[in-house]
Image (cartoon, rainbow, N blue to C red):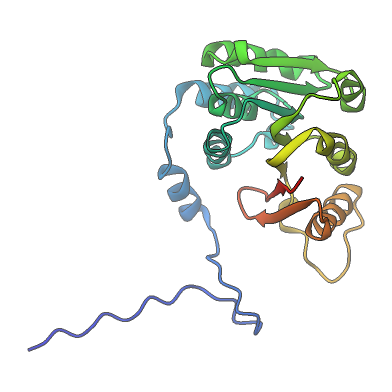
Length: 240
């Protein structure tokens, strides 16, 4: 007797609209699965950094990027053949380690942050990860740091993860220093899932993120896509 053909796979759709939106709703089980199915999932340096950050800064530990986002960034930086990268907002160093690991052998990462306390932890783990020789740290406002950058200094990759109302300013500061086909990443661009409602968010952080997401989608200088990684990552390819 012939076997019955298996039922065709039907991906999850948003049945409340006719837009043909295709997505898989994430839950804790799937998030754990996503993090299990990635390279370098048992990295002892990054895991130790996560634990120390949770212990020392429990009130702001959510500022640390997710594990899957870190692996994604390492792969992206590596695929770009990145020689020069910049990070605005370093916190305790998780993202900077991930970026530095993707750089070419003689690549350099410039980190900008305002907190000596946070970045002291970062320095410790940069050394443990063996990437301290690739990183230059500048403490102070990012706008001041950009004034010190030589006009000819160009980057293939930029990561912006600092105060949200300042995102647009940082974008305009970094864009003239980006090479054609370079990539700019912005973190927290779904703002805890609170965006996309009929009314614009009143909170200054949410309002700033919403305005920037919409600006990037219309900006002829870049090609942007908003990814549902972690708390949302807006990825922009610089068109030159």
